[in-house]
Amino acid sequence: MKLLLIIISILTAHTCFSQTPDHSTLLYKVDGKESAYPRLSNDDKSILYQSNQNGNWQLLTLDIKSGKNQPVWIDTFNNNFPDWSADNEWITFTSDRDGNEEIYLKHNKSGELKRITNHPEKDIHPYFSPDGKYILWSSTRGNGSLDIYKYSIKTGKSERLTDTPEEETCARYSPDMKHIVFLKNGTSYDDVFIMNVVNAEIYNLTKTPTTYDGWPMFSHDNQWVYYSSAETSIFCLYKIKLDGTEKTKLTSPSRAEEDARVCVSKDGSWLIYNKRILNTIEIRQLKDI
Image 1 (cartoon, one colour):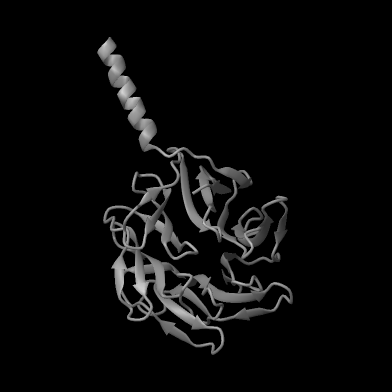
Image 2 (cartoon, rainbow, N blue to C red):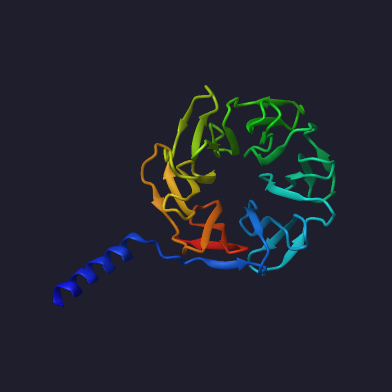
């Protein structure tokens, strides 16, 4: 009996040591609805996100301190995958308002709306560059699979950055704009990859050939990539150095949950993310990361 108690104590201690407790704070949720793809403003005070609480996808902002929600605007179309420009003057997003998924720009103050893609194929996942000059997005227009494209806001011209049979999505610049992090979808995996902007060399950062990773982004000091991974069969938040070292698990959701779509604060001390619990997607905050 004494030996059994010792074994139980050892197993319990190991379990507690290997798991990361969830000390997150709930910022917003609507039961049975999805509040997804949260993006922090440049002062880390507001969150831009998409919600299906009115039946179709609409864009809203959430004031973190007061909890007040405000629609970007309300219409009958699906507007999703939002991102803020570095100065918060513009929002880029995907919308089906013209019949299929295209990329748009909207000015926050004037309400000016610009359509920047025009193609019968799918155009999704737009992200501003840190200097506000470009937008990265993914499209099936090239070969039927999603490839990464770069749009110049000044010239209106687009450049194709990848051309593979796999699907490359969620492409985002590093703060110094020397690298692009993105997700490459294979037949049995989704891995996080890094592209060198100068020579276009690409390497696999996470190297998990039987695991699904997702939604990567750089920390603002260029030292870390934050992402979500189902390495333990449940999507959890991780961070990893650019050389693939010091991988750290940040959250340990339960079997009925998933943690994803991370967005890190400017000082790197906290982040926001989505937690899925059954058919509800919440926006949460995790401090002291």
